[in-house]
Amino acid sequence: MADHVVTIRQPKREVGNSDVVFEIFTDDGGKLGELRISKGGVLWWPKGAKTRKIDLTWEQFRDRIERRRR
Image 1 (cartoon, one colour):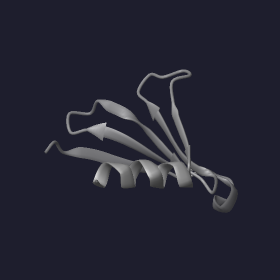
Image 2: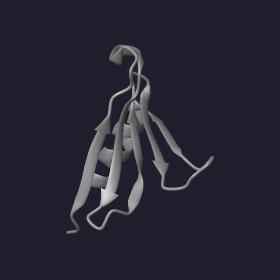
Image 3: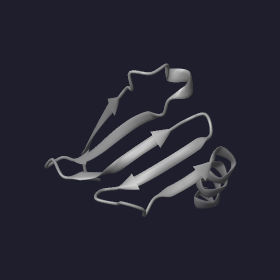
Image 4: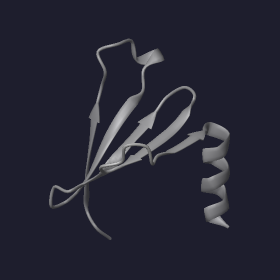
């Protein structure tokens, strides 16, 4: 399995109303994308994407994860 570097960038606003942003990099420094987590759900922005993103409510996220375990 490949190694990855995961960092977190905390916004300057109150955390309760702000996304928590994880920047995901490969072990050689290439960016894979950003994972944004908020009260409303999960958002994945692939590297270099302008409009192509995956935006899921928590229920949709749960359904996708549980479907993969079967």
